[in-house]
Length: 83
Image (cartoon, rainbow, N blue to C red; front, side):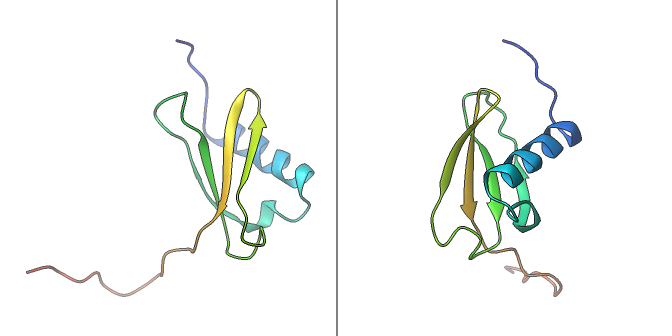
């Protein structure tokens, strides 16, 4: 099993890769999820409407990127308590 470095350098490379594939997509990304298992895809969430309702599955440096539209969570307000 090989150790890979993830974090800011990989995030920057992913964002640049997405921008090359589809100009303007980089600014629509709001979340990148790196899974614990190397066999699982890296999930990239973009704002609704950025992909026209479709999902992209791309190969990036030997890894699978799953780019999908997902609504951003609402900000503010207190979470409800289930008492």
